[in-house]
Length: 390
Length: 233
Image (tube, rainbow over all chains, first blue to last red; front, side, top):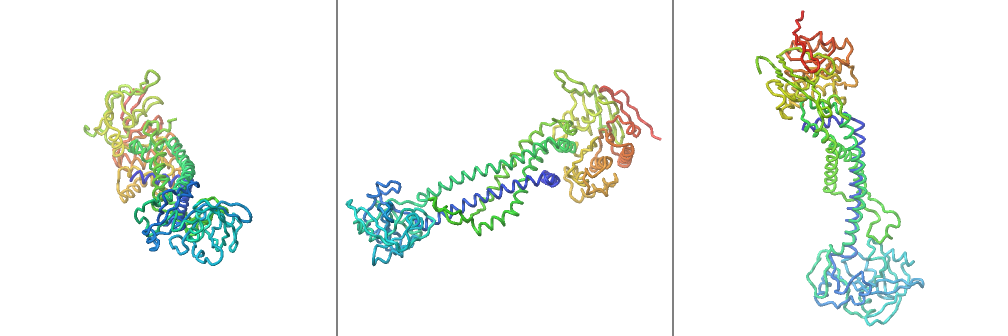
């Protein structure tokens, strides 16, 4: 308690020197929390959007399906059992049939994934209702990125060529009936969505599918022979790894910031120990043990981080709160990066993040304050009183 | 502790290592100092007066012999015990005042009481009383850089006296002061000695201080060469 009181008194007495350190440290607090908040917000939004648009409550993959192996796509389909069809009717699952195809927009060749989906499904946010009208040409919906890359607009007709189950090529025109906007590139880039039954008919795979996407409420509905369930942990691996990678980048930034702040405090402490020898000697003459003086100087250094936390709270809470509300708009073109990223990221701050950052900064500050303060215990008090130690 | 004898020094030797050998700063000192004395260790630079003062103040330890202060043998005290002795029973006045420049006058004087864990109200009362003794009540909120040398030394006296110690040790207290301020300071200390019966021990070679002493202990080359009581008119 005494060390706290005296340390506070010393810091307040040192005025500008204290406040310069505190301001630098408070900036570190705010920037570290902001940076982590942005990553948290991105992570949450990316997970949320991916679940809503692509993976639902998890997916059953046909045994041969491997999204990273284009050669296996042809064999990645299987007929649906009665039990599966019953689950689909109950809204627990929706079937997706995937096949490789080629699109010819304005005479160019573009490889695509032709994906058939039930127009009446409600599990994914894909606007499949536009596929319901099958009077005329085969309706198709595509994402904005695919539309932009291929210069396609609603109402355009485009030729699609595919191979059926026997390897026979066939071609037809599809009509773009809707262009949707999504933050989830895997359902957009190079994907053309058509009605499931039409797709089955085109490739001659009646009652077959490649993926069964589960509703968020249903999730895992039990093991299905020939199908492998992939949970959120597996399906969100890419996002998780990307965020982890970004966190490492953030950590480098964090280390640089912390190093600057810690350097300032370390420097102040080292200077203090030399400049304030008389004070140290006086404290000992007045009845403090050297250990108590070491404690006083350590607490004094550590108290920088407490004052910084208070200062950071004063200007940081309104600032970060405002940004959590209005979000951070991503620069134009970010949606072409192929990552699941929203146009505006809303930072997400958690109590754990704030407490963790505060504790980390406090511990680091205490450590860098203690290192130079240890020197006090080796001082000869009679020399210290006269300020004789070099 | 015999009949009011606060300090007993017997066959005290203090050596400092110098190169491969040592330098003897104090050589066979024998001395007793009683309660309420106003005594001075007098001698030229290097005579050992500050070394002796530091040992009495438990800031240093004897190489041989014994120094007992308030019944406690300085050489055998642990760090904590010697800090405790200084905290409760000894006050220090330094040549360069050694005030904490970031503290106000009040906070400087209050510091020893904080170490003694005395309550807030009591602290305020004692600090005000000590500042009244030295005539600095009006400077309570000033900081040392705003004070003159004489005023700083008065604050230093108040800080030494605020806990009513048995012994005050003053090392060259007037060395940085002009004649007028030196006399003021010495008169203040003499009055406190008379009123409160606090023992004052000076280390000095300043004639202005010497003329106030009631006992003059002369040191030369680490030995006591003369010890005389001075009768005041």
